Amino acid sequence: MRRSPQFTSLNSTHFFFTTNLQPCPYFNGKVERRLVTELIGEDSQVLHDQLTRNGFRRSHGAAYAQACPDCDRCTAIRVRAREFIYSRSQRRIVKRNEELSVRQVSAIANKEQFNLFKAYQSSRHSGGDMENMLFSDYKSLLEENTIDTALIEFRLSRRLVACMIVDKISDGFSAVYSFFDTEFDNRRSLGTFMILWLIKHVKVCGLDYVYLGFWINKCKKMSYKKNFKPFDYFWSGNWVSHEEIKNFKEFSDT
Image (cartoon, rainbow, N blue to C red):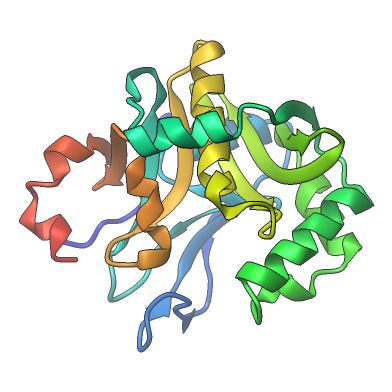
């Protein structure tokens, strides 16, 4: 059964459009198409909030959901922060990083962040579109939107070792993008640590969820998102717990 993005509680009219078919970046021989709307106007924060809770993802000043014609593997995923249970390995990661200082700052670009961002792209995503981004592009990524966005900085003494861009929404936080120093003691698992920190932060704020964007079934690059339990998938227009959906043959076969 095809899953189509569904909308609930959208109180104003907004225009949505579909992109042209493009080669899928995750699976050879597949194509992707997105359903997109711009996050503009006085109610852009409300719209973004509602769309995030309906399986959409933000990129710059737009929100999108996958609407591919012959593939159904992408689904939004969120961690249930209040119920989160640390695994042994996750507790070790927290312990290894306990001396890092964490600070939430305004989403305003600077050269220190950008240099870390560029080094991360060259190390982890060489040849990708983001590797060639200029400072102006990075500035646009952070600043050219009307959403309640912040940057979380992780430092060892004064050294910036990791950053996470997050959006605040009514029931939690959405992890938009993260990057880190790949040469800084890989035992620290900084990518995982940032998510663990955000889960704890959501709980401290009295909120419910950490939205991790899209998880793609049978894609190794996305497999780490299933390590933060319990979590929900956005499936057929509703959030469904992983405990329930693991029994759905239709889902596991997509």
